[in-house]
Length: 444
Ligand SMILES: *[C@@H]1O[C@H](CO)[C@@H](O)[C@H](O)[C@H]1NC(C)=O
Ligand SMILES: *[C@@H]1O[C@H](CO)[C@@H](O)[C@H](O)[C@H]1NC(C)=O
Ligand SMILES: *[C@@H]1O[C@H](CO)[C@@H](O)[C@H](O)[C@H]1NC(C)=O
Image (cartoon, rainbow, N blue to C red; front, side, top):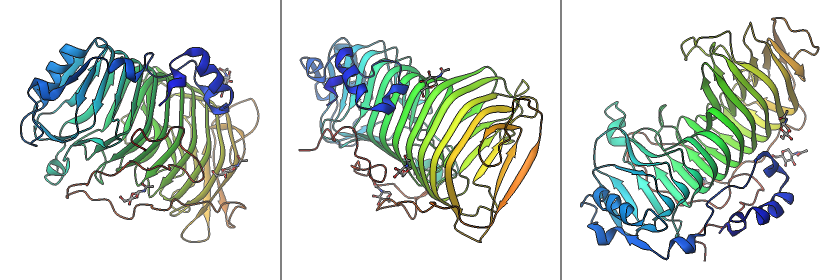
């Protein structure tokens, strides 16, 4: 339980012993306790739900929410429930969604299975750490289609999401749109092996995401515009697209973001920042203590990312970005440079800093570092304070010292697409050697 976050003064005490948390601008999480919300419990069973994996739980959730949205708990007891119609839960205050059962998608509409908006002081959790949403996305994917998204929060303030598994979304798993003062932790996401099945996409301010595992083939934990004061740490991208920012278009306003202790295996990248044209800025962000193995790209800032159509503007300004202490290996560093910092021609990056970076290639004995229009310190970046456009490639023929890095005990070796994905248990480790900040809610 994160009781220390309920009161700003106690939260400050906690911040003092956790240096990385300084990235956040103020306290995060619900402002009243789980216990106080449990004084009024609206069990979905009282509103027509049946744990028979066939009766539609949608109307029961909607009715339980109407009864409990001011200071109560919408409770889904352990059991298997079918969801045929989606719910839109708007405007609750001081409420919780306690998902101890498993919700199986049976409906085929698009949109979001569970959409929560304009809530204040909100908690979405499983008290047993066994609650899950099973999207059965494979039913769409094997036909070459996408379907609904699982869970979306928009304009939610003072919230947490924890101890939940989100599995096999027909499309995205979790989308946080312009949310503030949030904490997401002890969650696992497992999706199919193709693009378009994002893990967590997040925009807003003052959000702490920690101790999360994502397996899919697209975004792991990704920052969307606008975003500020976010701390993302202890993330295990256990076969995924990897963590990212973007894609970024016009009017970008992203600053004070810190990714720390990010482990990526078999992913598209360790971190990618992607834009093509566009305007606005990404400033003052830190990416520290990354470990990668078997990833295609490693550090990839691509401001000419042609998978995105050219956006209005001369380019996004990237300024004061720090990449510190990255170790491990990449699949083929001659094919995809482990340092690839390609900035806009008309808006050169500056204040970029790459230090203690040692990623070696798993195939061959040569790799490249590529920089274009990027100013700052380290590797192929150019020093100085006058900026013009340039392109440079450095060839590396010896393994950088200190590149060897720890692996996680149970890295994925395959990920299904056309078969059902079993609901995983939430792990208790998300980065080599790092202890999660909270115990699982269901730990006895
Ligand atoms: C940049 O971020 C650091 C924390 O990582 C913070 O201390 C500093 O004030 C920020 N700088 C600016 C100019 O906002
Ligand atoms: C660099 O990262 C590794 C693994 O993530 C960690 O063990 C090590 O302590 C870090 N080094 C520094 C100087 O922080
Ligand atoms: C990574 O995924 C594999 C395959 O599903 C699973 O066996 C393993 O437990 C996962 N790793 C962790 C630490 O959960």
